[in-house]
Length: 131
Image 1 (tube, rainbow, N blue to C red):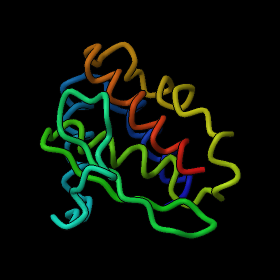
Image 2 (tube, one colour):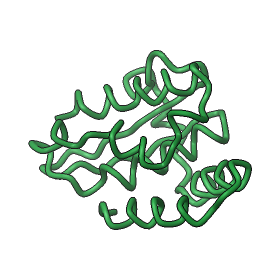
Image 3 (tube, one colour):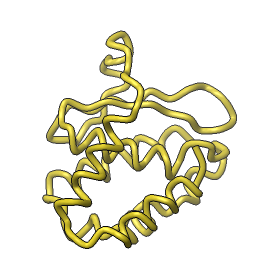
Image 4 (tube, one colour):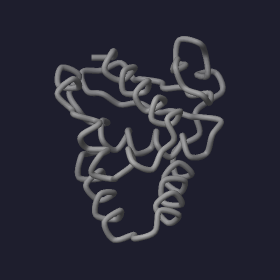
């Protein structure tokens, strides 16, 4: 995954005019993700502060790669977007990624519930804690 994949999402969002289409896009991104093995859905991978169940599993290397899952379909799509933003980032540069600035480019901050926004914040904090 690279930031250019995230830039593709930005371009696609610019093309889509209706927020229902944008929500469908986010959901489809989640459906494309590999299924997180049930053995990885453990407390140490669970994201605290999300209204839904969310797990992020990080691979141990000098470069950030993670997979994730959620019991909420829209949240799974948000995980997919975060993966495209972060995966492939050197671990020592994770904190330099301005996730909220990038996500603002999608307009998500204006169209997600407070609970979903808090969930994204909790996911970003867990990602940042990996670095």
